Image 1 (cartoon, helix red, strand yellow):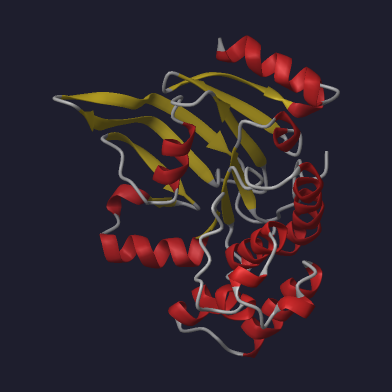
Image 2 (cartoon, one colour):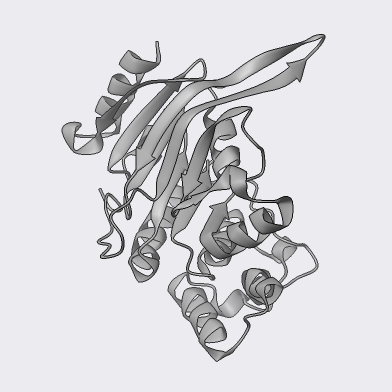
Length: 257
């Protein structure tokens, strides 16, 4: 395990608090339930993986934590802030400052270089001074992007695009990182490299990480795995209690079915 727990000397309140959250979406003439009373706590500096079958609600949960959707009921608190109290404008500002999101699809802006994509959150926040550019340069070096900083996304490999997305997510030093299947578009070699690089940079920001994944090898990086089934929390276990990805997959299957 590389990323199980980052030491954090900050406040002891939970970094992510999800309480009895429900979310439905329209389907035909009715609605379908994506989340049905989910409750989860994530401690400061903890790395938690959310696993579940397609349609279990794991991506919906991440989107709610990222303020890309709003729950129908229940509440979510991130870094001490109750999300339902925020206006749309406040949510954008809070997300920019507090939450770094790593997407499976990278979501880089095609017309911007690697360096410009990484610095975009800083520029949008109006904080692009020397400390921010120094930290961006450090991330570029640590993530092996020094020779690619002037390239645009279409000139990058998948692994390089994902490394750029990591740097962009970390450039504001957010206390919470949300990762949505971050290695889903990478081959096994690049996926392994991704986790090694992330392990190298996370201690610098002491972030709490919530990962959505269906890959046992990815979940092995976490301290704890929470399993969703049909929109509900079906159980959880600590990664230290399993010896390898195959054993983790077996434990997951017990809870998922």
